[in-house]
Structures are given as structure tokens and as C-alpha cells.
Amino acid sequence: MLNIENIDVSYGEVQVLWDVSFNVNKGEIVAFVGSNGAGKTTTLKTISGLLHPIKGSIKFLDNHIEKMKPHKIVELGIAMVPEGRRVFPYLTVLENLELGAYTKRASQYLEDSLEWVYQLFPRLKERKNQLAGTLSGGEQQMLAIARALMSKAQLIMMDEPSLGLQPTIVTEIFKTIEQLNKQEITILLVEQNVAKALEISNRAYVIENGRIVLSGDSESLLKDKEVKKAYLGI
Amino acid sequence: MIETILAQLVNGLVIGAVYSLIAVGLTLIWSIADIPDFAQGGIYTFAAFAAYFTVTLLHFPYFFSLVVAVITGTLLSVTIEKVCYRPLRGSPFSQLLVAIALFFLLANLAIFLWTPKAKILPSPLEGIILNFAGFSVSLQRITVIAAAFALFIAVNFLLKRTKLGKAIRATAQDPETATLMGINRDFIYTVIFALGGCLTAIAAALIAPLYAVYPEMGTLPLLKALVVVVFGGMGSFIGALAGGFLLGLIETFGAIYVSVAYQHGFAFIILILTLIFKPGGLFGRS
Ligand SMILES: Nc1ncnc2c1ncn2[C@@H]1O[C@H](COP(=O)(O)OP(=O)(O)OP(=O)(O)O)[C@@H](O)[C@H]1O
Ligand SMILES: [Mg+2]
Image (cartoon, rainbow over all chains, first blue to last red; front, side, top):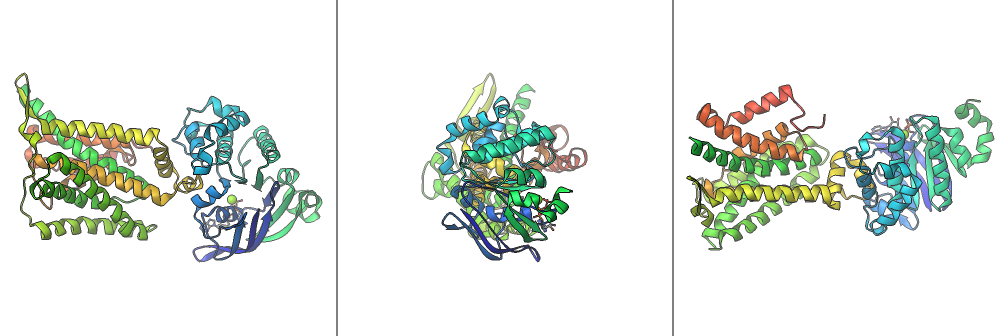
């Protein structure tokens, strides 16, 4: 459903992605891993339209989206859970969720979507009138995921959802990701927690210094000697 | 004695209402688009002239001239954003220079078009004097204060309760993430500049019958509204509201009890004190 072909991306003069190509099929969880500064966030930002490639193409369903603005791309059905959660701190939990359903397509399902995400994250329901900035880190991450779900997206991109969270919450978040995938949501998952990411994903890509250096199904990557040495510390 | 104090209280609230109206628009524009929009000073003047010509040249009633002023101010503000600020997005310093240039350009254009001579905008409300136990005040003054409060309630409702308002607040808090929700940033900019131009225009057309209509009339209100934004706290609606009225009252009472000579200086004393002791402003968030 998402096809990225040979994109180059730069910040001003500094190029950070070189000839990146990969694809995500409907129903998959695809992991996108690599060390700090490899270009993972840059890739997700380019897909969501916050950055535009200087070369190459990005196709989602039947649309070329590489030149589209972010608000149009959301409308097509791609949502992002940004790095660092980025909830709107001075809006309530409920207002954050309502904004998740801002698009015309999503707003007609607002009530149903709310019920759905409250069921997934009962804690958000208890705190719906609280300012998002006062939530704990784990709760903010849940809110960021729930907010993306509100958009009724078919593809959800998550940028390091487990970062800085305590182990029990990390487990909970990964469980939620698998659960969402069972509900027909396709997921592109960027993670530092490579072991966990490979465990729950169908396929994975490894990016280094702005280039894709390895790809394959997650199970065999988990057993790969290079991957073990570089990312799993074994 | 008590009558003078009451009269000055009304005067302070009237001038404060003008500062607050302009400051509410300015603080939205400044916090979201990152532009201290000096051009609102010119918009204030043009809106007042629009009202003046509607009444004196076209002979429409004063109430109708308020509508014409609002349309003029709103269109002017939105056009300035589209034509002058948007192409410079990402270079705040260039935008600041353009804003200041527009401030002088619009005032000079008004002098060129209509001469520097002050003109009188007649309003039927100015002739209606209300008496409260020996204390009298014109209906025009009461209208300025009442209209300002009605508008603040409306703007507060827009920002707090509507979907559009939530999108505006989200854009103010995190513009990049807001676009990821499907919010079109260009559209939000158009809305806040429209709102700013509209509030500025109403302020101008409401107060014009009490003073006069002339090309430089926008200068002091604009500069003081900018002070109010800093004083109240950048991006704070309640700060702009409270700060505007507070400045109006300080100026009016200061003119009597301290010195008339300082009337227009109080704002800048407040600005300096704010920057030194409370740089975030009264209601600022950090
Ligand atoms: N706004 C920016 N301007 C210039 N360079 C940037 C900018 N953002 C990121 N970079 C650079 O681009 C490269 C890739 O950054 P990116 O954020 O995509 O990495 P990442 O894989 O997400 O890393 P992390 O795991 O730390 O989040 C880095 O070298 C980084 O310094
Ligand atoms: Mg990153």
C-alpha cells in the first residue's frame, strides 16, 4: 500500500537520505530500525509530508504523495505517532483526541472512534478532561497513539513509541500494537528496541547513515549474525 | 469628586476596550504566525475612514458603517497576510521589517488620499446621554465597552468550544504536529488574520465618534496594543483582555493623579517593568 522508491532527502545543504526504497503491504507490521541519527525520523517525516524528497517517489494506494502537504496526506489515510509523543500540552485529553479526528473523513465517526480508543486505553477515558501536558510519559504515549487512531488511518507510522518508558508500559504498548494490527491496521514501526520490534513485526528494514543496508522477514533477521552483533548485543 | 472618578473610570474602560480588542487579535497573530503585526495600525486607520465615508459620503447610518469597517479591516488584514507575509514565511526578521514598512506605508497612503486633517465621524449614539443619579455618560461610550465584552465572549467561545478554535490552539502549541492532524496551516493563518483585522476594525469604528478620524490615528493604539500583548503574556487571550483594560485605566487615572504629560508614557514604563520583572507577562506560560 506504501511504495517508496529511490528517495533522497536533505535538510538544506545537508543530505541525510540516499536512495531509500522500501514498501509496506496492507496488513503488515513493518519494523524500521537503525542507530541514532540513521535517518528513521527523517524517513517518516518525508512520508507524512513534513519534508519533501529532492528525488524519488512515494506512492500510497494510488496516489503520488511526495509533493503533497501533510494535511492532505492525513486525509488519504496515513497517520503519525511522532517521536517524543508531541501531544498538545494545553489541550485536554478529549480535545487532543477530537483533533485526531479533524479530517472530514474521520470526523463523521468521531463518537464511535472515541468509544473505540477509550476501550483500548481506559485510562484516557478517566482522564479525558485533564490537560495532556499533565499526563505521565506512558499516558502521553497512549494518547499519541489514540490520537492517531482517531484519524481512521489505514497506515499508522510510529516513531519510537517505547522511548523513555518503563518496561511494564513498554510491554503494554507493544501488545497494543499487535492488537491494532489484528484490527486491520497496517503499521510502520520505528524502534530502538530492535529485539521487541523484530519479534512483533512481519518484515524489517535496517537503515544506516541514510541508506537501507539490510531487509528481510523479521524472523530471519532476528537470527542474522550481523543484526545480533550490531543491534541485539549478543 | 465621585462623579469625576466614575467619569474617568468609564474613559479608562473605553480606551482599554480599544487596546484589548486590538491586542486580542495581535496576540493570536504574534503567537501563531510569529509576526508582531504593525500593519494592524494601518488597518485601524483604514477601517475608521471606511466608516467615515460610509456615513458622510454615502449617507448610510452609523450602524451600517460598522459593517463596512469590519469588511474593510478583515479583507485588508487577510490580503496583507497572503501577499506580504506568506511569501516570507520562515524569515521572521524580513516579516518584521515588512510589518513596520506597512505600518508607515498605510499611514502615509491615508495622508496622501485624505490629507492629514482630522475628520468627525458622527454617531447618533454620541448624542444620547444616560443619567445615573447625577452621573452622565454617552451611549456611545457604553456601547464601546459593551460591544468589546460581547466580542470577547464570542472569541472565547470560538477558541474554546468550536472545532476551528481547537485547531487554532493546537497550531499555536505545536504547528508541525497540528498539520499531522489534518489542519491546513494556511487556512489557520487566514482565520487569525481575519479575526485580528475584524477586531481592530471594530475598535476603530466604535471609538472614532469619540475622538476623530485622521491618518495617524492608528499609531498609538497599535503601539500600546503591542505593549499589552507583552504585558498580558504572549498568546494569552485573557492576558490581552485584562492587560488592555488595565492599561486603559492606568493611563486615565495616571493622567489625573500623576501627570498628563506621562499619559502615553505609562505603557512603555509598563513594558520595561514587564520585561525586567515578568518577561513571560501576567498570564504567560513560562
Ligand atoms: N532539522 C534538521 N536539520 C538538519 N539536520 C537534521 C535535522 N533533523 C535531523 N537532522 C540530521 O539528519 C540525520 C538523521 O536524523 P533523524 O532524526 O532522521 O535520525 P533518527 O534515525 O530518527 O535518529 P534517532 O534514533 O536519534 O531518533 C542526523 O544526522 C541528524 O543530525
Ligand atoms: Mg528519530
